[in-house]
Amino acid sequence: MIHTLTVTQLAAGLRAKEFSSVELTRHFLDRIEASQPVLNAFISVTREAALKAAQAADQDLAAGRGGPLTGVPIAHKDIFCTEGVKTSCGSKMLDNFVAPYDATVVAKLKAAGAVMLGKLNMDEFAMGSSNETSYYGVVRNPWNTDLVPGGSSGGSAAAVAARIAPAATATDTGGSIRQPAALCGVTGVKPTYGRVSRYGMIAFASSLDQGGIITPTAQDAALLLREMAGFDSRDSTSVEAPVPDYVAALEQPLRGLKIGLLKEFFEKGLDPENEKCIRAALSVYENLGATLREVSLPNLPLSVPAYYVVAPAECSSNLARFDGVRFGHRCENPKDLMDLYKRSRGEGFGAEVKRRIMTGTYVLSAGYYDAYYLKAQKVRALIAADFARAFKEVDVLIGPTTPTPAFAIGAKTSDPVTMYLNDIYTIGANLAGLPAMSLPCGFVQNLPVGLQIVSPQFGEARMLNVAHAYQRETDWHTRMPEAYR
Amino acid sequence: MALTREQIENIAHLARLELKQPEVAVYQDSLSSIFEFVSELDRANTASVAPMAHPLPGLSQRLRPDVATETDAHERYQANAPQTAAGLYLVPKVIE
Image (cartoon, rainbow over all chains, first blue to last red; front, top):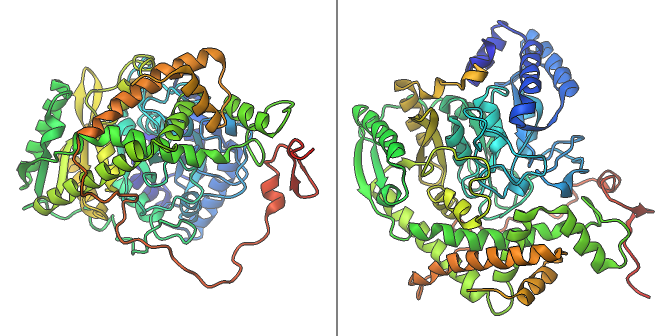
């Protein structure tokens, strides 16, 4: 079936005229429609615009024009602004917001020829690890619909896992690409901070947010990231560095690769069955000529508490823009300006977003700034230094993405700290600004397990190469949930 | 560390968030447990550590030539506003 093909195969098939973009787009739109009552992966489906773009792509292909992704359908996380299309960020606050421009990521993928299918569900303002905080309802895991898909890019991961979209954009502030990719059995890449433009990507925590991609394979991720990455003068922390050809770098041999095993990742909390899958993956790497050595990052256990000071602080500042005046939800009949602000925000934001805004407001308030925010920024420096020290000894770090496979819907909603600990293995890379990814490496009770690879800054090419080498030796990434084959 | 009702109400006021009465108790519990959790940071010795505000060392703000690069799009942007008049955003009366 056409939906079992990878993005790379779809792009090649389109160029070889094996199928048209209209056929492909219609096929995926039909799959989205059929899955929506159960998975709820989409917030908006842009059927007419997609078919129109597919027709134009077919004309380009017929004329021998077009870019590397011409005619390939993709979907965007609803955090990316899409001109003329509702961009809700999973929130009631933006339920009525129609983006007046395209995010740079959206514009670049459009320029490369991709066809947008629609906008994907997500945790509200990307704050969550289970896709349960969305105003548009929970997304279900295609492997078992009683379970969460992970978050915050839960719609992106579920859509690719169920092959209702060939690829999906996503964002990662504390693990929001890698954790759902792990729980849904797909490949998810968070690039180096500053590698992909944040322009038009609704801000949560600006020193941590990074856009990326969820795909069936590392090869697909290389193909898409090559188009998405690059300098953008509209993002003040965009990095002015050339984008390597990630696809060309995929086939390098791994002989001599030095892999670091983070001692702290294999300590308490890691499910023993998950650990078996990770250890088996490590022996695949040994057979490919890599060497393993244990490294320790002593400050890493403090990454979750440091994150839950830094991220809410930046969130409280970024989300101050939602004031009921210029865009977004406004309350009925405000009696004065203060009432307008308070009720518009009180009604427009959901419970978790309010919790983080208040946490951030408190840690930045007079008298508490030094004790919380400044302290956390210092611990962040210690964690980044730990990673830098490790990368003097090894080329990449490999370990689990999550402590356990997917958990039940509702299982962790009553205690925020339990939910926050889901990101224990992923947050470090955000604090240090490192590229990191998750790829499928086995199953526990028919649920996918994710393997995480972390690289030094701007080491995406090597990281994707390391992931691709594993996917040439194994077939975990080809497994699909039964209901969606 | 346990936060009082008054503290939660004050934080919500600073954050310009109206809370319903039942929400106050919920946030009292959850913020207290979050602050207890993040107090683990006290274990780290950070005596001579410079705070890290940003993951890219040495990044500085770029300068560009002082020429107009954006076109006027206020009508398009104001299409999302709840209430405007004559190109201005409308809010309840501020000055009596």
